[in-house]
Length: 302
Image (cartoon, helix red, strand yellow):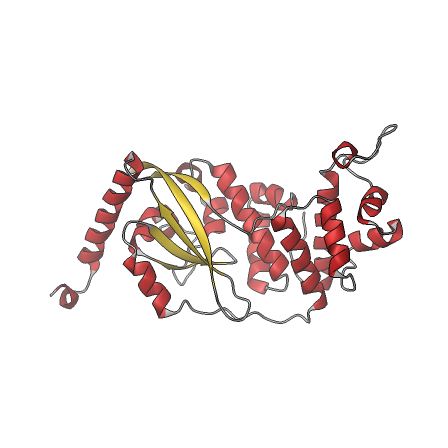
C-alpha cells in the first residue's frame, strides 16, 4: 500500500515515490538521449536524470531517496526541468521541500468569514461553495446544496453535517450514478488531495482521511499510487441529478485568502446560456428556493 503523509520519514517516502514515478514516465527519446540495448526499468535511469539536471548520479540518488532538506531551489528547478514536471508537479515538489525543512506544526482550521457566506448567498443562478484542502465542504449557497443533494444526503457526511467530496466519491455507490464522468472526477479529486498532502504532510486529519480511503476503496488506492498532482480545478462537469436530470455545467475555482496556511477554495458551477442545462439549473434553483421557504421559521416568513 502507498504511504500516507505524516512524519519526516513519510515525507521522504513521498519525495522518493513521486520522483521515481515521474522518472518512469519519460523515455530517453523524449529528452534526446540515445538508447541502446534492453532497459531494466521503464523511463529514465537515475544517472540519465542526473546528467539532464547537471548534478552527480550520487547526488540525485540521494535526492530521490528523500534527502531534500538541504537542496537549493536552483537545483530543484533543474530536476523539475529534467523530469519535465508541469506547473502543478513543480509546486508539489517545492511544497515537499519546504515541508521537509519546516518544523512540524499543527495548522489551524479557520471558519469562513461571514462576508464570504453573504457573497455565496447573493449568488442565485450559480451553485457556489467553499471547500478546504481536505475536500470538506465548509460553506455553500442554497443552489450548491440542491445541486449536490446526493452528497449532502449521504451517510458519508460527518457528525457535524459536513460533506466531504472525496468520501462521497469513493465510499458512496450513488456517486457512480451522480457523476457521469466518475473516473475523471475521481482522478481530479485524488490529485487535489495529493497537492494538499505536499503542502501539509503533517496534517493529522488529512492523514486519517487518506488512510480511511486507502483502506476502504481499491479505486482510491490505485489512483493515489499514481502520484498525480492537480492544483487548479476547472472545466466541465456532467451530473445526473435525481430531480432535474442531466446537467452539463462549467465550473471555475478561485483561491480565497486565509491565515494559518489554511486552503479555502471557492468553486462556482454555472450553465451555458440558452442550453437545456441552464433551464434545468434554473428549475433546481426554484425548487431550492421553495424548499428553503417551506423550512424557514414562521416568524421569518412574516
